[in-house]
Length: 245
Image (cartoon, rainbow, N blue to C red):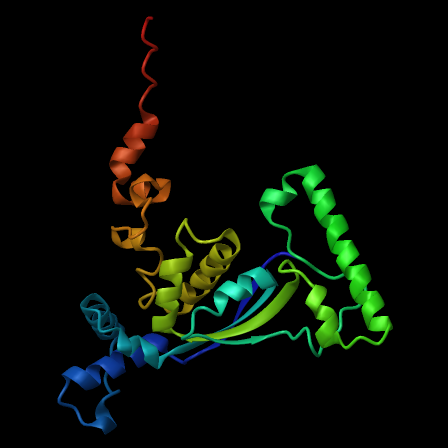
């Protein structure tokens, strides 16, 4: 099953919420009027001001909740390392699999027919053991010990905008693992639709003109973003004729 990501809910007027929190720091207004008389342009300017100043605690005053399905347990093992986000995952303890156990096959395996066939057989062997263990009276919480990282799962994720910025910085990078990178881009596309000013610069650091990764200077994406004109000319330049030996 393919990755599916849904934005289940989010704070009303997320950009206004961030701007109002910021205004509380810089304006002499009392608390009863701190949210009054905002124009869209003023909101955008205030968000840009705190974003560019690195005053990102203001971004913590708005929340986004996602529903994610069609991902592997290998992905969620990485996901929970982002400790400022909250998760609820479908339980393998309380929910028993019936029939074929759904799993995620990496593209690098799917592209090799012989290896993909062996992977399929391995997953079926695991499923057969799981079914037999359940039928023999083994609790689901123990039978699941045989289930692989490839097992498909679904998860609900809630995060504030600051935590999401950090997540997008790390997980949309070319060096991120392919599955969580796909998830990060899918989540980023959704929040950009509802809060474009908050997430205008969201993404890997190369979006902002630098790279912290050791192989950054050699990354095609970083090269293209950091110097798009030179990169385009390089790709359009005719090949040099071979030198005579």
